View (cartoon, rainbow, N blue to C red):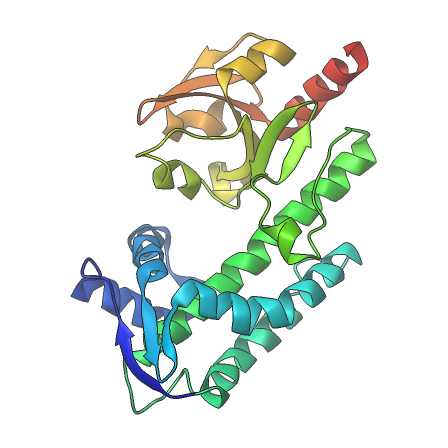
Length: 268
């Protein structure tokens, strides 16, 4: 299959192009400021596509068909076997991605615009591996703690595309690797009852926390302390109340959230 053209969204500026191409050289070694600028560029590439002799194929469809469909289940199986993030497997697949795309005719060094497809696939494979490593870690921990929950089978495409990651006592939630989900939802309401994620505290220590809708926290506990988003790590493990971009949220330490959920499940 031969790529005839690469269609990029009009909003994908020259600055976005430079950041995306820098990822090919530096990978996930961007500093925090660079990541804040680069992630919107990768999000814009969701709307990019390649034109081939058989039609138009959006970047996300191509990624799912050529990368995720081939490698996702094997990677997640390694996670369930207790091999952590399986960095070696992630890296091995990352090295194969340029070869896979070139073999299918999607990546052509003689067509510079195809580099944006390559960087899109490399970025989302990395995001995939980090995201599911954390999700499997959370599921294993909840099982060990005794928290009752429901989750789809991550080894299947249907399970990975479920509208939410976990259901706990009727509350629906997602597992996120960073606070970027707050920025990505500025224009729409946060749909779920809770979000398990990590925040960076003093000494760059990453702490697991849970963002909850106030209604969920009121149901399982109640009291909060009002703080700013940037001050979360300094006030944990207290239950915190914040307003961010018009959204009211409660933030609690993950261990405290588990404790409250266990008590709630026993009462229920």
